[in-house]
Image (cartoon, rainbow, N blue to C red; front, side, top):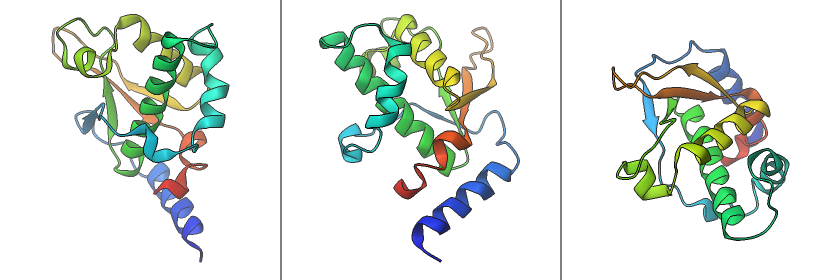
Length: 150
């Protein structure tokens, strides 16, 4: 069996396993999106029209990097059998805003686009009063083609 076959088999096992507990989460990690090279370029190009209408400029580049970061984090939590915990309304002073430049508008655009394209699904709705953020998991559509990154 080849390595890619082993990776795809692992993905199928992870997808068939029980959903992780709602508290088994990982926050958005600061992975280097450059480590992927051009691995997500086709997928990012497909998603970007749903995220931002501009095709060039600083805002577009920032959104591209954020989409890559979200995709990389989704693949990481998929293979570690966790859920990705994302704030829906980051504010100035929040760690996710300071580190990644995410605000409510950017988060909503990216999350909605990833769900619309079938790359992730919402597994738990957050509650501000309970201090629990929304949890998301990658879908087979995202994990299978990128099993080789394992």
